[in-house]
Image (cartoon, rainbow, N blue to C red; front, top):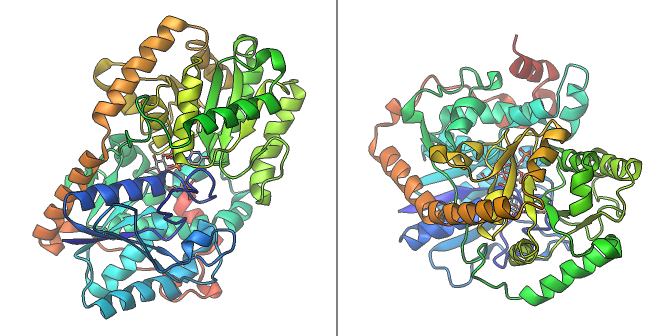
Length: 499
Ligand SMILES: O=c1ccn([C@@H]2O[C@H](COP(=O)(O)OP(=O)(O)O[C@H]3O[C@H](CO)[C@@H](O)[C@H](O)[C@H]3O)[C@@H](O)[C@H]2O)c(=O)[nH]1
Ligand SMILES: O=P(O)(O)OC[C@H]1O[C@](O)(CO)[C@@H](O)[C@@H]1O
């Protein structure tokens, strides 16, 4: 069997140099890479279809074909879409319609056959899935990873700010495509039940899919790579990374505090990750400040507390407010922020900081799932996690507790969660040990791959007609993108706020 993965944004670098640096590298790309490799290792042919980027800033993404070293059966296929240079994911829509999808069809026409099925990732992959199926009948699964309506909720989109936010995020296009993708996919794949029942039943997706219909959903949890994230492995540059972290701490933290445990977060600089809430929690709690430093590992910037983000929106919505809290509460010397070069380095950083009983925090305003706390726990850190996340249902599996849940909107509650672990050796050791064991034994990419393969087998053996409710029409903008036809603010408001 031949499976295509539709994933236009970000890119796939065989050596993972950019996972912790690239602005559009996040959980989804880790997920697609690991899943593709796991499926291929079970004997299937996989193509990861992505966008060709010819850009001196990201030179590794220019070649049309690539592969992961030592991995058979996975091709990375890069096809042009619009301008040559890297574009953030929100700007890709028209180029996917005009170039990327036609280029995919041409590529397979030249090869003689299309894949048997596509797996589409995120709304942009979903659009390609919809258009390819419309033209060729090739079915697709849809994995949203993160839905626009929840992002809008947490950004507090209102009639007053919707126009301004839509200019940057293109929420109209995103919601419209998400509705189409969940409506027309053969199966929607979610990380958790909560994602299926709660996130997909947002009113913005009404009439697109019935969340109670078991034939339309498969809940398949993601995995963690134990060759990277565990306490029993060493990164190729383990000692060098320990030195890098020591140097960054020495650069930012007052001398007498440099050996303190860390409250550690690692994420993209996106407002939804709520690093601001974490900084506020640290500012709120004298207990935390007396016993720990706050360390923020953020993609792309060497010195985020002092260096401007490349993107104005990121600077204004994430970094400026964080610096204000630090300034107003006199937290300089207690906070460090930096980036690490790659995923092995991130794992090494976790191991280094676990030795001093640090705690990992993911305080996102909302998080569809959250690979980051799974990775941190696998590398030996206990985790404090937003209760507005898909992973929360897993953290409390079978009456157990594998992490401390906190309300991301309440800095005092985040502080309470952290205080349970910082300086509390017994509790720290219990949670670090139990959570690591649980993650490494339950979250494997092989079982994610098995979940996809059984969903795919079901799709390929069932008659097409039974897979769908009423089909939603494809909006004209996604057939031939003309600005005049773009999803209007009225359409977006109707979708999001209801009639
Ligand atoms: O500065 C950085 C940059 C990247 N990473 C890595 O990026 C990934 C982050 O993944 P995740 O925590 O899952 O967040 P997102 O990038 O936002 O991923 C989306 O897709 C994931 C897979 O479906 C879901 O788990 C998320 O909830 C969803 O928001 C992890 O592998 C991290 O190691 C960092 O930790 N720090
Ligand atoms: O915050 P959003 O827009 O929902 O996007 C989440 C997505 O962003 C990325 O982290 C980076 O583009 C993807 O890996 C992930 O699926």
